[in-house]
Amino acid sequence: MSPPRDLGRALRAARDERGLSLSDVAEATEISASFLSLVENGKSDITVGRLQRLVEFYRISITDLLPMGAAEDSGVMRRDEHPLLHSPAEGIDVFLLVPDMKRTMMPMVLEFEPGAELAEHGKHGGEEFVYVMEGTLELELSGLEPSILEAGDSAYYYGDRQHLFRNADPKRPLRIMCVDSPPVL
Image (cartoon, rainbow, N blue to C red; front, side, top):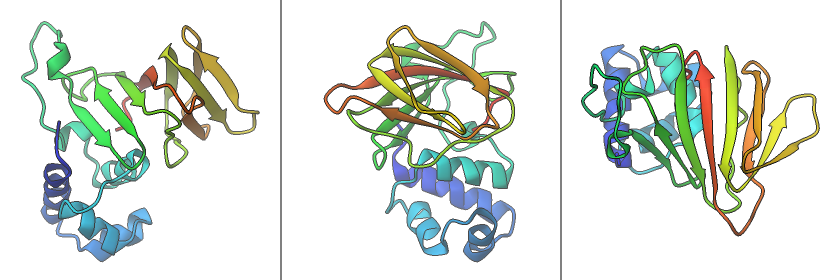
């Protein structure tokens, strides 16, 4: 697992490589400069949504920020090689299931603590597929009433619709597989 300090250092390096100040990044991403400083110094967690905004702004992929295992030509990744994005503030772990972002799809497994939810609605280009492996997912899609999905249920939608994942069970964890095409993180 990548501790917040390592992620913060990688974010600072991305900003420094572009010759940008904290104020420049704050203005472009609508994330405060003081918060960005805390993240870069390993003193604060960052939500998945905010991290996605930074990745998009820097025009990098999440794999540029996380330590990655050695990619094999076989395309096989072992369970201990999956890069982890840990978001304690949201109570969510995101495991990337591919060795790099040079793919047409980005499969992930998301694990939510009981009652946890993404802090921000997602919206991106492409398409998204979600499969509930364990637990109860409340899926919000813009313009529709929230849907409750149980283990074995799935959803498929265009990523440009605002969407939000929430663990609908306050007592049990939720585990889902999500595939974005093209990769968004």
